[in-house]
Length: 407
Image (cartoon, rainbow, N blue to C red; front, side, top):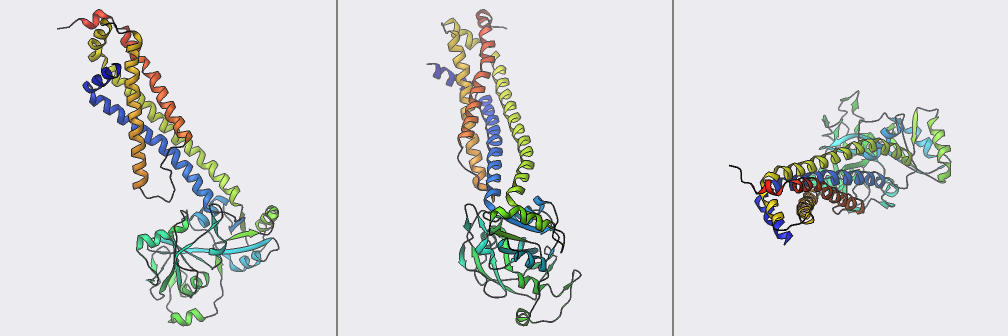
């Protein structure tokens, strides 16, 4: 009976009810959305690089080097001499090394020059190698390997011809034609948005660029590929150690390298600094979402208070028919529960829809975890407690005052 009374009461005030439900839903979207994005971001950063002991770049901040060389975020770094790369690669502590060079682009996607070892040494998640969906590793001089998102967005296929752009698409290498030789499977890492070429090819096509200007030397592409071109610079390098216990010793050696000013970055240490910077921002967002929920809660209470005048006769009649205080409190509690429950269901649905529709490199979970379920239960509990306020106010209204019809 009490549920039927609550249902009919809500029908008489359905506009206010649905507005309260929607305000709760928005707060749920913000609250859960921020939590999921924060967790997915942390997981994404942790999964992007695995089994790489060290990153080396021209002297900058450790976070800057990590973001630029691994996540491809931020402005370009200074260049390090290729001779320095070769010397570091042959140090006793080093088991393997992979050079990285950034700078060119292709139709909005960044180009990374490296060698075939990148696809043998770079690992992500729990030690996975990048896999090829079609084609394979570098073979020809003008081979290009594209990440999955590049292939998907530009509809590139094997053997398609491409022309890379110099300095952020300001100038195109129109006289050097590359061919797609490999397409990577999706990895949910920044590599999905990269175009890979060989380091020697990158150096070769820039022979005709002097002081930022193109100077046509009339060298045929076939002849250029056969020239003995000396590599000059790289943006940085990835390193694997023979013995991980030597990592601090090697870090100190590289940081005090006499050839040039270099910086050795231990990924785990740099990620720890990055997470500390992100944590304060995440806390601010979390408090904003909590504030939104509190506003939504007050909106619900305001709505309930606004309808007390309309419900005064309803409550008075129920009391005259013998309804106890428990019944009145139950009416408000059930209505409050329905508002929050419907708001949570609607909010979770909207959030799931947004995750599905909005493209993102983050692998955001569609299902709530234990922590999120606990937060939702706390929201329900708070709303039930809050419903006691209008219930108590309504209970204190006199029976006689409620029955009087004022003209």
